[in-house]
Picture 1: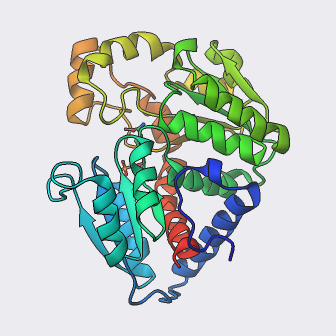
Picture 2 (picture 1 turned 135 degrees about the horizontal axis):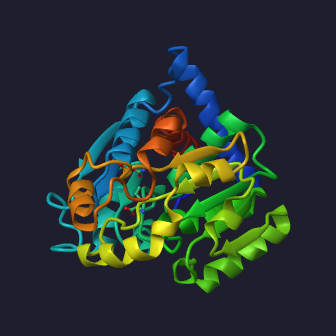
Picture 3 (picture 1 turned 45 degrees about the vertical axis):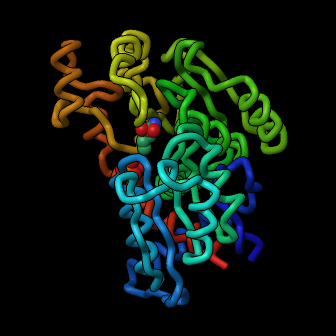
Length: 328
Ligand code: CP
Ligand code: NVA
């Protein structure tokens, strides 16, 4: 298989056909798991899960996926790993590369996961960096396929801060797969110009249209998929909340936005989400800014909860496909 031994750092590195290879394998592995069939073809292999930021879905997905495949896992969090404090990234990568058959990294700059990939001679998987979240994209695409069918030609709209991992990654994925992609946000939240240019090249080949629109209603008109993300990402300072709430409140996903979209439109959220005040940060911001929810209303979230939790489940099936396809 063409994907054997490959790193999985951003979907920019994969062709349309390769992305479909991951998605088809994920569907096959999901169907098999539902029937209780497990191919433990990787017994004897071990993978390292290196997390410098917190996680529920990504960590659990890597662990469950690996165990389903017969693979052993070792979880390293920032408090137990020496990386960056007493040992360089390059040395850590060379050590892990000698002991493990694959390495997952979640953390800060994309340059860190690239450096790990450079120094470890085994596949390295990006479990989220500031810039990209490629495993999340496979889960989202699998979910859209399950709910809406053919991906090419769909109209997807992302509302919110599009300069970070989710906005960037949606733009790449849609432009590779021929999905018309609109970003609805104030101009200052559009992705950086260099990435937009790269994606315009992918879009020329796939036929996707890339649109940047400040009016949330023009942007979402007749859309098939509406998606958003938290307005303040992991690693960003708390002081930024006031500005984000002021700038992005017109881009909150409300029932009016969903009604403006196509009649069969679905809503996606990578999670975690502040759709109510049932979290520490949600409560704190709710009290401070007099809000009941932040990036999406509770009504929208609950109406589309089945889709959103399919998306969360699909993290595991798609991550399993990435491990199975790339492990040497
Ligand atoms: N969507 C996502 O990456 O979730 P976690 O942060 O819980 O891994
Ligand atoms: N943009 C979010 C995504 C979480 C899955 C973050 O980086 O915190």
